[in-house]
Amino acid sequence: MDIREVLVVGAGTMGHGIAQVAAQSGWSVTMYDVDEKAVAAGLARVRGNLDKGVEKGKVAPADRDATLARLRTSTDLRAAAATADLVVEAAPERMELKRRIFGDVAAVAPAHAVLASNTSSLSVQEIAEASGRPARVVGMHFFNPVHLKPLLEVVRTDVTSQDALDTVLEVGRRMGKTCVVVKDSPGFATSRLGIALGLEAIRMVEEGVASPQDIDTAMELGYGHAMGPLRTTDLVGLDVRLGIAEYLDRTLPGGRFRPPELLRRMVAEGRLGQKSGRGFYDWAAKK
Ligand SMILES: NC(=O)c1ccc[n+]([C@@H]2O[C@H](COP(=O)([O-])OP(=O)(O)OC[C@H]3O[C@@H](n4cnc5c(N)ncnc54)[C@H](O)[C@@H]3O)[C@@H](O)[C@H]2O)c1
Image (tube, rainbow, N blue to C red; front, side):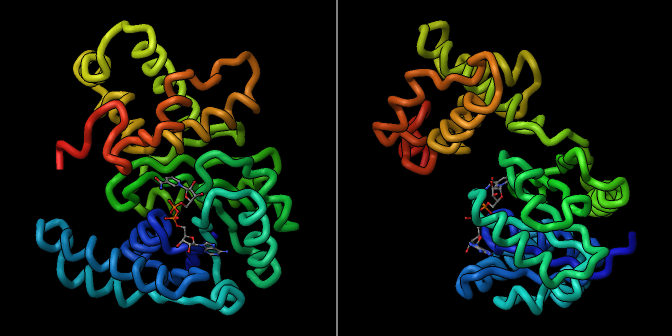
C-alpha cells in the first residue's frame, strides 16, 4: 500500500523519535499530542537530534532542513487523522487510553489507513478491537532512542491482514530498521526474553552467586551483549521492569516471571535505577 502521510499520536520519548525517522524517510508527518507543551518539546528534541547528526557528519544540513519541512505538529486529532495513511500511536502504556485513541482515530481516518501501536507489552488484539477495523491494526514496537536503535518488532494479531503487515514491514525497511515479526502474545519477543534474563540475574544477586558488576561483565564479554542485564534494568527503571514482570506472571503460565523478592524490595525502597540515583549501581556517584 502506498503511504504518503504518517500521523504519530503522542510526542514523548518514543513519539518524537518515530516522527523524526518517518520524516527522515521522506513521508509527510504530523506529530500530534494532547499537550501543547509536549508537542513543542517533541519538536525541539527532533531538532536537537538532527543538529547533533549534522555535527557528527551523519546528517547532511540539507536533509535536516528537508526533514523539518516535512514535519508538522498538531493538537487536533480529528483533523490530523483525516488524511493519514499510517497512524502510529505512542501514548502512555494504558489499555483504556489506547483503546480510546484507536476508537477516535478510526472514526475519521481513511478506510485504507493502517493503524499501529507502539505498545511494549499490551495486547494488540485488545487495542485493535476498539478500532472497529482490527484487520488494519498491527503493532510497531520501536526502541529507544528510535533514531539510533536498528530494530523494529512488528506484532501481528490473528486477524491482521497481510496487506497491513506488508505495509508496516515496508515502512520499517524504508526507515532503515531490521524487522522481526512476532505473534501478539504477552511481552512479544523482546520484552519476554529481556525480562527473563533480567529476573534470573536478580535471583543470582539474591542468592549471592556473583556481584551485579560480575554478572553484567559475564554477559557482556562472554556472550557479546552490549549491556548486561542488571545495568539494563537500572537504565529501564526497576519499577518499569517490575510492572512488566507482574504482567507476564499474570498472563503466561508456569510462574516463570514471578518477580524476585529483591526486586520488590528495591522498588519499595525507591531504588529505581538511574532515574533515582541508585539501583544495582550507584548512579549518583557517576554523575
Ligand atoms: N520509553 C521507552 O523506552 C519505550 C520503548 C518502547 C515502547 N514504549 C512504549 O511507547 C509508548 C509511549 O511511551 P513513551 O516512553 O514515549 O511515553 P512518554 O510519557 O514519554 O510520552 C507519552 C506522550 O503521550 C502524550 N499523551 C497522553 N495522552 C494522550 C492522548 N490521549 N493522545 C495523544 N497523546 C497523549 C503525553 O502528553 C506524552 O507526550 C508506550 O506505550 C510505551 O510502552 C516505550
